[in-house]
Length: 343
Image (tube, rainbow, N blue to C red; front, side, top):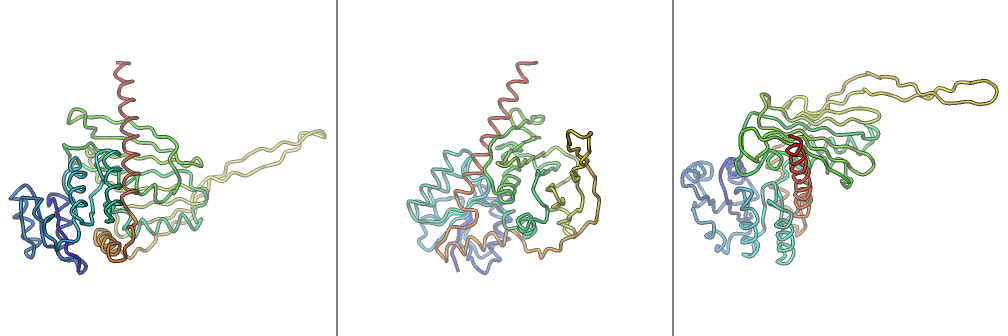
């Protein structure tokens, strides 16, 4: 078993604590958090682990092989770099860092010391997301026109990052995985209602090479909890609904077909008319063998360590998502500046 330390046992860290404590691949030796009350809760989840408010203690333990980081985003880089320098493999919750400069530094450090750096893009380990990838690659949907993602809820409101950095890493990683093409341009608008300079709702647009569009709507100020992604193709359409566990993937035989009609305009020339035909056919529900994505994700971390290879969501994968987040933030700030000038 791989000896691991968890740094940060708060909201999401508690889920990591639970899975690590139950894992057959990891032995959870240490849990660190600056808040003693948080450690008391973690102790109930992982009674076998030692608890400390000093994050340096596990790093000096030579039996610790890996560190899982679930601290606030602003501290990801500092905590991960110290762990790498201590010779530990590192798993960092999303987003990898608060800037591409920090993320690049983390990647370079991991490569220099020969340790694995992995980012927690959990949806890459969701069976339904992987099944949709297979459906897209098979050509069932035809040519992909656009992907539209909605990740909405009422709370949890963060104070360290806005809704874009909090929620959109999931959607960006999913779209990059499904579409598999470079992003040529971005646009973004957001509004802050609850806290100054922290957008509660964001609409982001990604234009991928080959004229494939990605649109993302994230909000923690919405009455409904929605985790839904629609893929519109030239032949069929698909909806992935992470909330609807019984029907996570639905394929719709719907679309608009373009038919060419030749019309004779006399003896001298012929021209083509195009007729748009709406098609509405059957709906298929895809069965998915569900396994907790967090468990699959941490198993991938274990496999990458034991097999001496890079994980699917390695540091470079996380760096690319951070770069896109930065581009979207810049676009959002520019749009806000334009609106300020108009008003």
